[in-house]
Length: 326
Image (cartoon, rainbow, N blue to C red; front, side, top):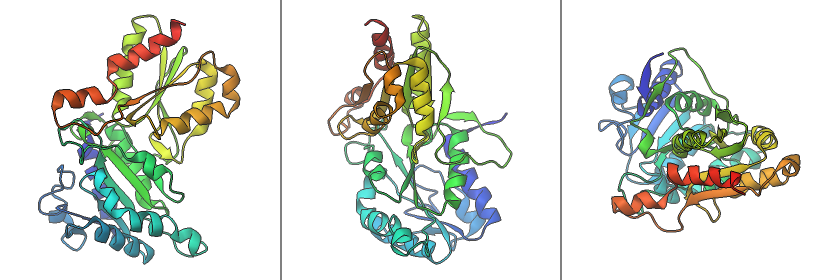
């Protein structure tokens, strides 16, 4: 199977669907001639024209508000926000309009839009351009939240997100853009709400998503050297959450470690832990559920300090091995 980058996979998903469906448009700051802040939409304006690949003013509020209106009147807009941190400027139309219109209009109007945004740390972009904001969004009924970890997942999930009748926030960890992986050339979609077992195991369940998936797989390989067989589950979609896969894995292994880049307090790991604790998997646990998350600090610009803020593969492996030392 051919290998392409995460960024290419996202671009392929958009281009393939735009060729089939003229309702799909891409909007955002510098998505046209410049090709997007991270080059994801490079070449798209040349193929689809300025009417469908629209460079917008520097106003996340205005862009997102326009997308909500466009979606309600029949288009399928994709909005690119340069950095997920800037979703703060788009919260009013996203949270108060997009997420609620289907409910408030008695199911007579839906808002089928996708808001794409690169997030997370690792590029030296400092505190205002490096946050992991997924837990804010997961708290809003009506929004779906997707965080793919591989090129194949990114392409399949984005295709599903484009046609979902609900607004979908599609978060892309910046360090993943240049990573490569096998991606089928066939037309395929990955349904929202299905976690993926990236590595099967019997001793410990590691639950994670986004950039941390790769590190958890590294940690699982390290733990294997100590005779520990770790299972790694990639959530892929936070909302809707595939609770059944998590519960069944916790029942099988009896030990659960949750890993994410966002800070611990209020992080999505708490929701995962509660899901397991409130299910019959609780009675199969041989140790308390553990969480390993980012530090409770703004992301530093200094590369060395920045690398210390989020869990490393070594820290994850130590957390896994800690279960078996009890």
